[in-house]
Image 1 (cartoon, rainbow over the protein chains, first blue to last red):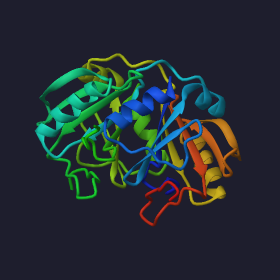
Image 2: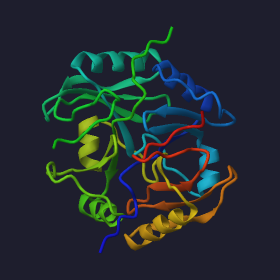
Image 3: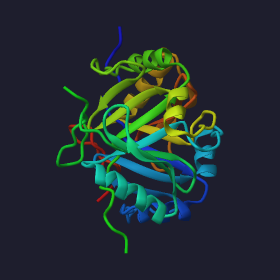
Image 4: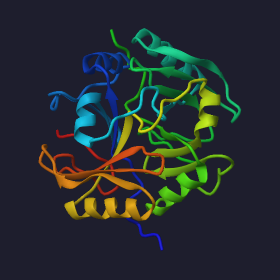
Length: 145
Length: 145
């Protein structure tokens, strides 16, 4: 029998980055606000009810005891938007912030509009407008009922 | 000037997995409930206001046009708990579900109790009780005020 050990949530998403200052500059360039309280060797961003962390790869490896594979990471993130135009804007902003487009915005097989960018470490974000996955006023996304 | 292009949120965290059924079995073994509506070649889990996706690596690579590096992924996830005992329980459940401990539960330099497990693909989760990062009734975590 499967017990309910984990509540259905993810608390922190950490990008083990090659250069903390460079990664911070990129994500601030995306418009995110670094948490001003905990800044010694790490950066945190409050992302709704989840935290995004930037932590130097060498420090994350020392703490966890594992050696991460090279980028792009096989765990990747998606930012879903409320409109097609917002997909285009986020991809353009990623380039302005020092990232690059890895798949230009286009129609998706699942019926929306999407593309991918890579951050300054080469990790990939999908940027997608998927009307089937509603986003509430607080930015929480839901699977179809 | 930095515009507010991205709202501060992450919509979907996707694990590009080696074997979808194996990954689903692991995460169901952790107590998570697979979304019953969209199951063709993908698995989704509603994680509060975020979605966890499991998507075969070859399909994710075909869609994004990038070749991911090997596991463990340099983007890693953390599950924060409400107690030290819950850290121990989640790590034990990870082993029961087919994962392995990569760092046994222990005191953290930042003042909590934590450890790491690897899932069936070798991707790492931190499991942590950090009293400085409060978790509300709905599971949303916050950085200190």
